[in-house]
Every structure is written in structure tokens, then in C-alpha cells.
Image (tube, rainbow, N blue to C red; front, side):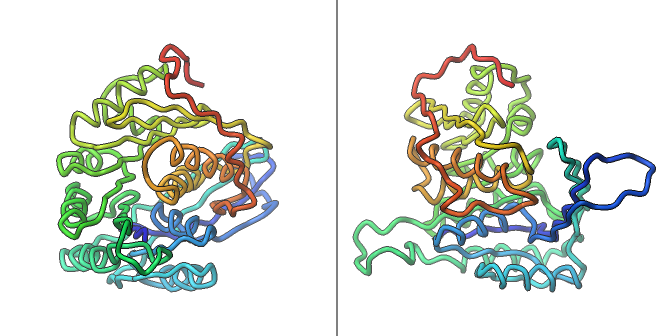
Length: 325
């Protein structure tokens, strides 16, 4: 079972245009409305691959009602925590050349009791085994609780640190995919995995990243601060996994053009956790799922037929001097 926690979900509206011309009236070439929020996307990807998941999230207002309806249509099991204000709606403008412009709302301010209810719901959601495993208690894997995304107003930077501590107390492993002060604060709680992208990794380590070696050093800094493992997505340069066994790099060629980068990192985290949450095989799945996601419009999550594990090249001793794209 993989439980995702999204404190700041959204409706993601994607408008496709040949080229964005500021100050002009334009007709959309296409439009999509998808469930939004990083944890929501992780659960959507897992459901597409038949994996057991629960999406724990806040809901409020008409946007919250529409979000729940969309997740029900997608077959995503939801544990919703009603809040007093409407959740946010985000807008993505996707141009034909692959340029993506995102306009994200801050989200509703949460009250202290709503934050506590969200945390309690996350810990109450998972059993300590995978629903698809045999009935025997032998070798049942521990549940993952993945806290994902930005935090809305009213939620302190220690939210994910609190979630990690509660997950560990409940016998679950904890993954965190966030940025800024929330990422900094969660490290002291010793999460089992953090998943920054390149910019988030540089910000957290407070160093510029130009080469693969720079990325590895930054990931090691996060491990020194408390993270057991770091899965860092590097855009067209694939991803690295840095853990107690060392450094593994994986990348895959993009089969077609980039349709949308929205949700690619979420698909990568879903693939990593679905493949066991550790080691080169999980990294291979992360890169395959993330690569597949960028070829799909909006925030569509890849299905099994979209995944090409054989296209992923894995290196256990990567070239640290490699300049990143």
C-alpha cells in the first residue's frame, strides 16, 4: 500500500495554444481539466498500474467537489478531509513548441484542527502490508506514506517532519517530495526518501549545480542532513539515486516530442515506489515512468503500455564531470 498525502490539491486546467501571444485574444487548440496536486498525481499513476494506493487530501468548495468527482472517475481511492475554504485551481498554458507556463494559486488557509485531521487521516489510512501481497504475514512490505507538494497558507514548514515522525511511529516508510523550508525542515526527521528536482536540490543544498558530480554532492548533503536516500530528477539528464550503497544514474531517450512536463516528477516517484522504493530497479522504473509522462498532454499519468523499461540506461559509476543540460 502506498498512501499519498496532498495538503494543497487543485484542479489543473491545461490550455493548449500554438504560441502564447501576450495581450492578444487567442483561441485554445485544446483544453483539459485534471485532478491536481503532487500526491494526487502519484496515486493516479499507481492506479493506472493496478497498484494499491490511497490519496489523502483536503477538499473544499466547488473545486473540491469537482476534484473528488474526477478522482472517482479515474478509480482513485480517496480519503478526503473537508476544509472550510475552496481548494485552488491552477492553470497551465502549453505551447506547441513544448513551452509550458504555469499559474498556480496559493491554496486555502488551513486551520490547526484541519491540519491535525489531515495528518491523522494519513496515518490511519495504510495497513502495514500491500493489499496485493499473499495473505501470509511473511515478507509483507511496509507501507509507504508519501507527503507531496507545496503547503497552503496556515501550514507550518514542519508539516512533513511531523508526517515522517508519525509514519515511522506507525511502522511505515516515509517519502517526501517538496521544496524550500518544508524540505529543509523534514530532513531532521530522517525521511526514508526525498525526491527533489534539479532546482529544488540546488536550493536545498545551497550550491549551484552544473555537472552530475555537483548533483551527487548536493544529494549527499541532503543525506548528511538526515535523508536516508535521495531520488533527484534531472530533467533530460534522467535521475540519480544516492543512498547508503552509493550513486546510481539512469536516463532514457525521449521517444517523441515533449507534450507537457507537468506531473513528470510525480510519475517518477510513483514508479520508484511501485518498484520497491530502493535500488537500481526502482530507479529504472522512475526514469521510465517520468519519461513516458512528458510525452503525454496535461498531467495525464502514463499507463503500462506507455512504459519502456528497456530504454533506460543505468550506470553505477556515472561520469561526475558530465555537464547537465
